[in-house]
Length: 546
Image (cartoon, rainbow, N blue to C red):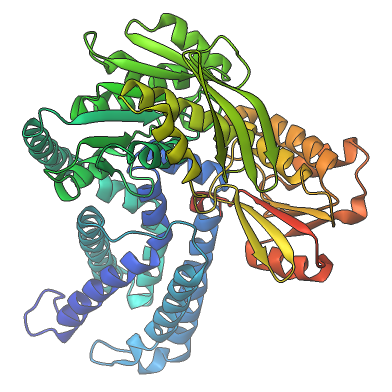
């Protein structure tokens, strides 16, 4: 019977199977969709993930397809004598395919995630297009095999999952023109709303690291005088900023603080064209995201896009005077500018008499020659750097030293950013949100401040460093050896490099443990930890490294 004959029941079964398979594969491909979202819907980031993970998820989904295909073909062989155009034995093999695929999908969804997939409107559109594409491919495969390879029949469906790593970016590519237009619409709405706030103080914060911490610190200090609106969490993309302006910014707000992230040249410039900040803070220039930027020069150029976007008349920039690249950009800056530094005593804002302990810091704050004593519960030298930069801008915006002092005293640890916790008689230093070369060393220095008990470091190492990653993780291992008694290395990503660094410093190999996941690492930790010990959780791998 002709496949497309309206009286052929297999035609309608094929259509139903295609649609069901299209929906199911959207769920099955959740990891690929997740990574594309984490990459800011940039194909370059998606490609880097495939390379860095050695396409292990492609291998897993290939195994799923091969297992399903094998079982379906065996079923066809066993029931060969019963199968004909009107027989439904041909569909028995589908039981294996659906069972394997559902099991695979459940496993993917249950895997621990640092940043879960967010079902935004954009992701919903992407899933719809992907589902339709996969349904179409499924139908074509069923038709071809039914007409020309009848022995295979519906077994061809088992081949569709292996196409997901390719079809996810294809679906994204189809949507790009629409998404660009949609983005422009939101940008236009955002700009229109911002024009209704002519007196709004707009601040941009960028850097390779320290952006989010600096944002929260600045919010706390400025709140002593102003009503402040900040981007929540790590909202630092174009759509993230439009959402903040459209949904969070109210007429009673005096200040808008925006965190600006980037993964390639031009990203910050685009964000600045959206917000038009008058004030900017450059927290750092480092090797973070070197894998997507390519060179440190590109990173510095991109971060400096914030400074170059500030208005010549009335613009004001704050630079981290303890970061070499920031100092270089400070010298090139053409708008009003200041340096904030721990080490440089001639900086506009600096600190004297610094006393850092395992419960916080105290210091003499010096602003334009004026002094005041300050205390904070925040841990680490890098947080002191962030505080000083915020002080410089707060002073420029008219806060008195007393208001600044009060704001600093109210600062609270930010979740998973060198956050101090007490648990069952031991101490946890939770620095698991992310990590960088400089921040990891600061965290280890804080660990050193604890004088009792064993010091244990749990870490997967440093990532997103491109060609510098191997060398930096060896150095990281050497630094850990100076401060820790035990090390648990999570995941295989940087296992050999960290271990090489540890052993080169004479670290006891018996005190180096490894685990495949953070859950396993915590179980190992229970075996060695005692009351009075201190545990540093340094970094947690982004989901596109797991």
